[in-house]
Image 1 (cartoon, rainbow, N blue to C red):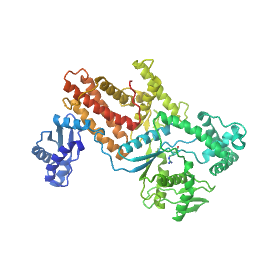
Image 2 (cartoon, protein in one colour):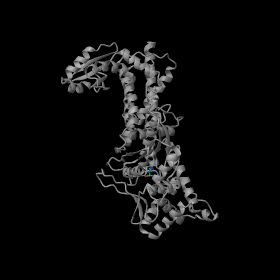
Image 3 (cartoon, helix red, strand yellow):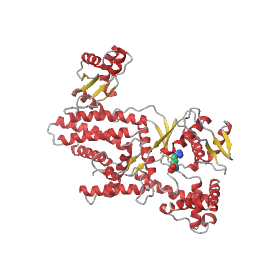
Image 4 (cartoon, helix red, strand yellow):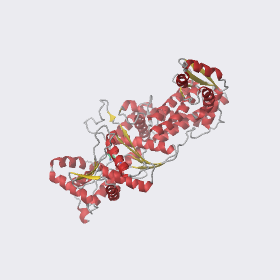
Length: 572
Ligand code: ARG
């Protein structure tokens, strides 16, 4: 803890006298009413010194005298640390003077982020929400920590799904324009477009001839055959425009809009490498790579890189994409964010890379996340039991927020209520997601997510709006760093925790860590706000100190909002 060096040094000196190996290990106190920080070091010292932890704690605390903090022993052997006001003031000033709030950058690395993963001609559904939301935040966090980041949406625009969709479109609409140049171009909305695939998929199950035709179209498409390829381009365009609109609402953006199809050119190279390393085996006409390892305690199926019908599969495209990314970006790491259910796929693909020495020095990471569930604990569905479209979910949340805004009666007719409802709704969705540890499922609870009180996105936005409004009303002031009450101390402790947790969240790829601390910080601000007069304070120094502190809180919450990619409204 950079801001507590003094404590660590003084305590460290005493501890070293007893055992040169022991570490202070300062942590936030879980009983803030008693102390600010605590160390458990005496419990490990007790083992080496063969004495009771409490007697060691008492010995250490009796030797420490500091103007800045107190140390006292607490049964059964904790060292509790309480900072004096002057020390709090010092920390306060340091925070005020550092835009990054003391959050140090880590060693720079180049990371490719693969998230989003929308599929062409299919609507984005609730499952795609998490990849977009978690991916965007983890990417921003990594960038904030100093990494060089590239994001790629990795469109699902390849394979039989495309052949099926095109076959269905050709049966239902006149596509002669694409083959003869006569007639009209396809004039489809994304909504119309997404009707074709489900029909085609159902049809293929019953109608062998249709399925065959779709397979043939897939092959023609992959060869870039005129007509089919042009229809594919057309539907890709419609689909991507639609997807972009949704990502724009969510403030999710990508450097690259590559698709699985873009990796096509690298497929021969994948086979060249696999053949050269002798990794390909034939099995019932298919080409497979064995990826089992002696230490596996459950069966590890081989990876099929080419089906008996000669088609390349999901894993093949994945490997080709890796080869292309290595060439284009020369990354140190590639991170994938998908549903937990793809864990096996990535494990297999990473093992192929290891065997084939593809990206030998590159670290491949897959972060699987859980599902968004309904109140019944099952994946969230529409009332009719279908998968909920992401755009519909956004709409529902937006409407719920709009209702709350209108109820509050704070806005006038001139305010852009729709834009405000969208901003608040997005904060509700994102916060509701990111407050959870990513691998876990969570329950989507509209009422809870959209509430302006409690642990929610709207509450966070509201706190920032209030801070901005106080600072605007206050105008210029001369910074001052005097700390008086426990409310202010509590805020400084929350700031220290937030600072630590941003780094910890980055290290663990778990945004929920800093999201929780940002919420705690907002709560400690709110406690100060409701108990203390600020703008009406007549003691100028006191007022300036309070405003300075609020400014630092505002800065921390801005970092939070930026990492979540949520827009802060001017008023709400
Ligand atoms: N399009 C896939 C899906 O909807 C997700 C793609 C994830 N990324 C990847 N490189 N495989 O399930």
